Length: 167
Image 1 (cartoon, rainbow, N blue to C red):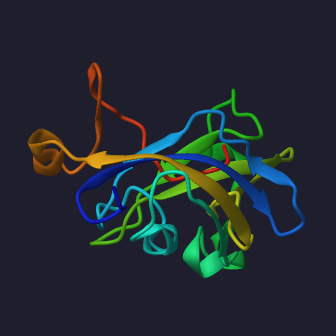
Image 2 (spheres, rainbow, N blue to C red):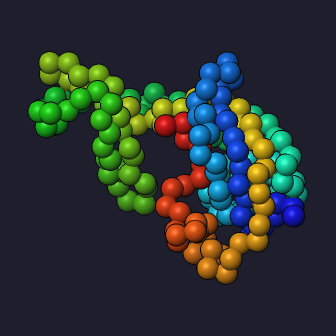
């Protein structure tokens, strides 16, 4: 069966950066509903269209096709007083953007006596990714999966997004 709209695709995969450093070792296969359901990067979905189980594929994703370019304006230095006492580097929090914009997820990258540095970029922003995969299985989506717009597992809903995020 070919990968096409409204099929469920299972991929064994690995993601590296352009220097071949492993970003995601793909310990768990990606299982996603193919056909514009936003479960995987569009460029990967496009490359998979029409292929069959057993085929191997390598897709190079420049930042604009993955997590975007690094935006220095998303790095902010805030007053330490804005944060609770127990913060640590690596903690994340959402900051309301306003109006129709999505909230931004910020990561604390540095803490000084009276300042905290937060970064609203995705950790892989600005990184070219190399997505290598083998199509393990292709099947028709069930009516329920199509109605819900995502894959269901043996026990019901699969709650994780399929997009490799390297985290």
